[in-house]
Amino acid sequence: MNKFLIVTPPYNQQSNGVVILHELCESLKKLGFQCDKVLYGFNDQKNLVFNRTLAELHEYINDGYVIYPEVISGNPLGAKRVVRYLLNFEGAVNGNALLAGPNDFILAFSKRFHPAPHGVLFRVLPKPGFDTINCSLPRHRPLDVTYIGKGAQYDQCSIVPGTLEITRQFPTTKQQLSLILKKTRFFFSWDIVSDTSMDALLCGAIPVFLTERPIAASDLDQWELGRIPRAQWQASASHMGQVFVPDDFPEVRQHFLNTRNQLLESYEQRQMDVIALITQHFGA
Image (cartoon, rainbow, N blue to C red; front, side, top):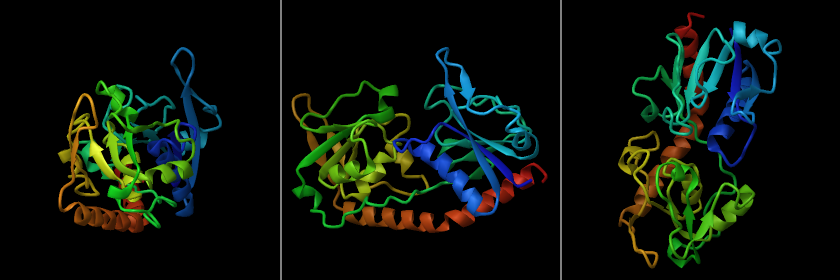
C-alpha cells in the first residue's frame, strides 16, 4: 500500500498548517508514493463537505492511508486506515474532539501536541525572502507590530499602543509581510504557536509573547526547535510599556536558527522514518 490521501482545506498561504498539508502531498509524490488531496469546507449549516465524491476516492479509502488533520472529528470518509496528523493540540482550533478509532495512527506535528503519539513529523518550511539581508539592527528599526491571530480564541486581546496590527488579511502577500517585518523592532504576539513569530524572527525582529495560552511559552522551549529567543514585556494601559531583551538574545537566536536549518535538511529522512512506522502499524 503506497497510496496516501491528504484531507485538507483549500490552499491558504496565511495558514502554516494548511501549507504543511499541501506540501506533504507534494513531498510524498517526490518520494515516489501515489498521493492526492481532497479539499474540505463547511456549508451554511456548518456541515463538513468535500469537493470529491466517495467513488472518486475509492482506491485511497480502501487501499491506502487517509491523513486527517486534527480539526476533523471521526472518520467522515470511512477510510480503512486513518492517520491523524495533529498540527495543533486536540481541540485548540475549533474545540472538537478527535474521536479517533482504536487502530488510528496518531502522528503529531510536535511531540508536545500529544502525550503518546505513534510518530512525530515536525516540519520547517523554507522561507524565501525572510532574512536579515541589508537590514538594520532591531533597535534602529521604525516599526513595532502586534499580531493577534488565534490568540482571540483564548484571551481578551488588544493592540499594544503605538504598534501596527498585522492580521491574516494584512498584509496581503508574503513579500509585503517580509518587508514590514524587516522594519520591525518588537513583534508583539497573542498567538504564541503561530508561525508568524518565526517569520518575524527570521527577519530580525524580536518576538514578545503577550499570553501564556494555550500553553506557557516555557513549554514551547521544549519543542523541536528548542528555546525560543524572545523579550519580556511589562504592560502599561497608556503606552507601550517596557520591553526587556535578555543579554543572551543574539546567541539564543543563532542557536535557534541553526537547529531550524538542521531540521530543514533532515526532513526527507524523518518523513521516510514516519512512513515506515505507519506501514508497520497497519501491518502492510
